[in-house]
Length: 164
Image (cartoon, rainbow, N blue to C red; front, side, top):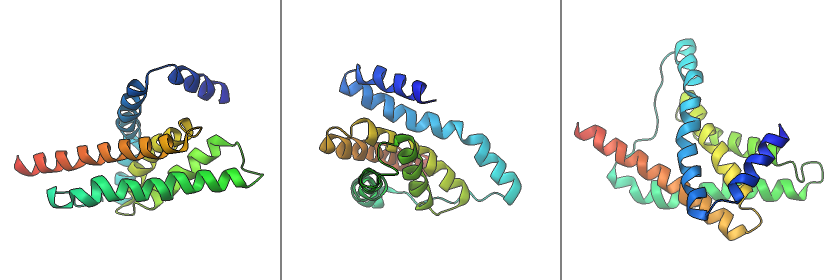
């Protein structure tokens, strides 16, 4: 498993920054789609509960600016820094990515289905933070940017859905 993860990282590092960012953004949606069977299974087992955040144009500042900054700090930056300080978790990046994504998912408590959806996005954001971790400013702000773009898409989709 480590060799696949490592080879993917090495190939991605050879790409220009804008290509990396595009791939990370696209990956957020791709991994969320891959979680659809699990989300559908929870709908069948415990009943449909597709509650999520109420996203409209009036919440743009909170959802696009403030939330990505705070959530990147809480869900990616802090776990990464803490796990690098503890000897038993130092350099265990797969564990960091999993823990970070779990925290990200758990903090999005709108519904079980939404927590699974958030966990999937958290996997990409945590990997992204790890990917750029050699340059801390880049890791924080690149992760924040992709999170903000993903949230922007959600607001835009919500506004368009309301108009239809």
